[in-house]
Image 1 (cartoon, chains in turn red, yellow):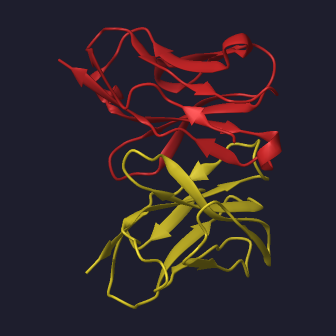
Image 2 (image 1 turned 180 degrees about the vertical axis):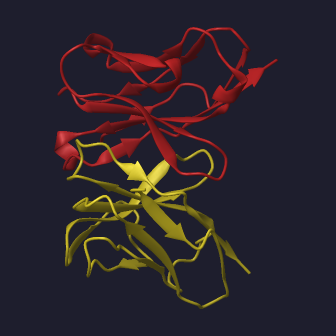
Length: 114
Length: 113
């Protein structure tokens, strides 16, 4: 079955430190890949997405992600965390064999310490 | 402003009661979706619609029903058959199914009295 795994339900970093949120998917066919952010009691906002082409994707708020087919990964990074980055982050994958619907990971809550 | 609106923000359901959550979009998107969010489980697809007057079940459709009579509107009814309805419900839309970006509404939190 199609699945998306986000390692670590909670990640804590200091302000100014590197942010790394991990996402792995299960598919032999390169899917479309998305990262969304959710602030408390709000909807989801798209951070970035990979469809085709360049494997390093830049998004909003200084975030970027790299698609690594050999590792079936799409990890999200940001060089320097800001207090406003504290939120829940979801990796999502669109699988062709699932009718191109989105499958979401369980989410990672990012805490930023001052 | 273009976007997706959901109402109400909070909804309370009594035992045996059906309740309807509203979702409206003015993005001229063909596809619309309903997700259920529970802590630590991510988002799970309830129903989706790719075109007016047509919709398909998602992974957890039991106890829910939808309609798509207008392109802009995709209401979700939580029926009395849904035994554990307490959750955060999110509506989304996209230009078409799957590979295009989905845009989300602000959500409705459903609580059981």
